[in-house]
Length: 406
Image (cartoon, rainbow, N blue to C red; front, side):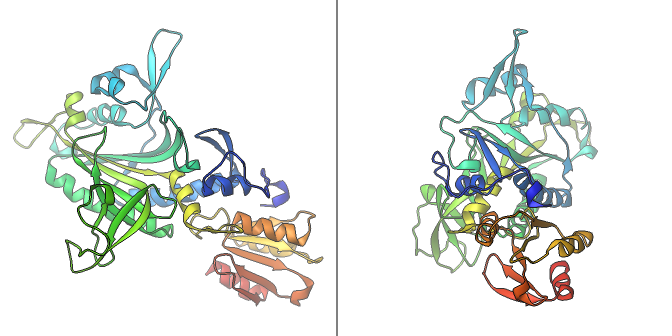
């Protein structure tokens, strides 16, 4: 992609109406544009990051036998009345129609997925089932804040599983838990799982996946030696106390929720009369689970977690491009751009007629992992700079290709 053709622009100053670092940098670097509080348009650079995050999530959900679907975002009022959500969930957007009917904008999908799966499960042989989607959600937040980390509309992966009994759900939860940690690790994020209240979904205990970041909303206690972790608000322990699961010592950190899992029990299957025939032909209620990850939220968390005073520092797995190519001092970078593009390397080529200072500042602001500088001063070699460490080296074209394609 040539930067001169990219539908974007950068800004030297942060927008005055944005308080969070992720929103300031994503707007300045040309990844998003604010429509209103809690609502953003994602520009080409931002869409590329979202697709990278989606693909990581999709690969891991497919690996645990999740099947991707795409459910409707506009729901009839009758489904939400049937579960009690219409009158009890205060963040639900309610949409009147000129036909006299009312609808809800999906803030979650239990009301749609339960009857959807019910039509396709007849007996125990049809279980377990797990379906997921990556789709937009809407929640009527009183005060949307924290940039793309908490909005009134947001992109989310939500998966729902159905099981013949509690043991099978518990088995599957452990599988999904491992998949969640793989997702966060692949994005370069450090995550812990904590117990929490099920909130408006259920009275059962749920689990939240917290990513360590100074911009988080939660204080957690965690053990480095094992997987023990708890939210400070519900903890009876303190920093420095012994871990209740092992001989480690508890540390405290600030974290942001990036995913969760709910044991929904039989609440929704009861609401819809969802039963299956067991091996003896008796009617049984399945156990239902819900697993969420905020895609746009993870984008914001990644920026909060990894930036400096010059701009964003993207992890390679979710960066919009692999390399940012710049020609300075009359250096012709066009042949190298053509070569790398032909080899399948994702390159953002700054071909604008701008000064060196502005081009390098924009490269730092956008935050692509590897910067390539072509200049007569390099004596036929390419200066390769790592955005995260700032370390540079001079490589000839053959060594550069090997470096980028390894």
